[in-house]
Length: 243
Ligand SMILES: [Zn+2]
Image 1 (cartoon, protein in one colour):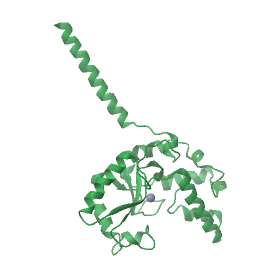
Image 2 (spheres, protein in one colour):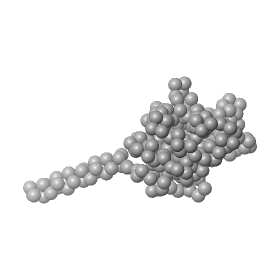
Image 3 (cartoon, helix red, strand yellow):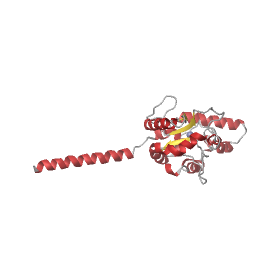
């Protein structure tokens, strides 16, 4: 009888240990350097627009709910690979170079809205830029005025303000007065539960090392000071709820 009770005690203890451990593992999911910088090693779902499976599921739920209010949320940009971001960066660089700007000026212009390849939150599969597919597409989609009062995407923005956080989605580059770095992006949302741990792990990487690439236009300007400043302002200065 005593032995039986002792066995029971051991089994219960082991079970408890197992539960505690699996919770700890869940909370500390680690992502590889590749996954954090858009170079693969990340589970994604979707055809043209890709997201992490959980992010995709939550997005679908939110989309369904918004439809009841006549809003058709459409993602125009989800996961972006390093290569894709490199292409975007170099294209913008070339365009500004043709317009006659100096490399330093070009950098300042690009990083108003565009991240240096390897540092984009879109690499994580947790981020999305959204529009409302119910209304006629304006010539330029992702501009602040579309989401502001009287803008075509204002009903979408109002719906998101009231509901997005219930589904786990938060604005990253919000319009708080003291925020530096990227300008206000009323279209860019992040799935907090996954993005927050990725953000923390990303900051532990040697960021300058993951940026330097001879194929990156303006590579020679990526000095330690420049990157340091960029990380402090553009990467770290985001909606406080995501830090
Ligand atoms: Zn975005």
